[in-house]
Length: 159
Picture (cartoon, rainbow, N blue to C red):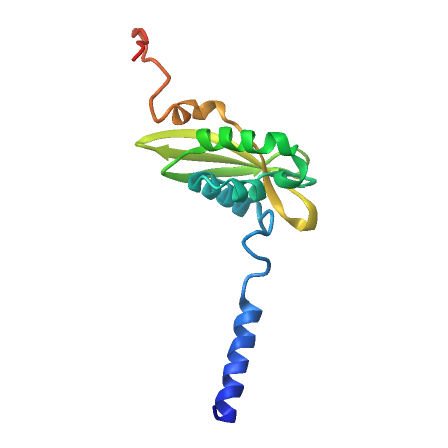
């Protein structure tokens, strides 16, 4: 290789490395509260327990480090059921208690749209985590996309 070509290649490599995102895929939390919500919902959609444990957490850090090991997988599986979706839309954001941010999110699954609230918190190293999710409004998404509500005047039937 000619010396000028080698210098150009070295310079391009240095620039590429400098512009690459800091931290790997396994870095916990997110740089912003909204990105924390996006990462959390992407992990739930992908049914990825490890990614969910990195996006979910408290002001003390990611769930993988702060939730009891015997409970974390069970709790993640429950959340994944409720948060199963085809697409989502963040409808709004607002302040929460003690510096938290609250996000109103529409989850769409099989044509059904359900609205819930996710709360983010800042943890160590200025990283953000989803701390709480209102699961109750998502019950029928967990039920396999079958509405659990009965229209007025109708009696629910069993399959």
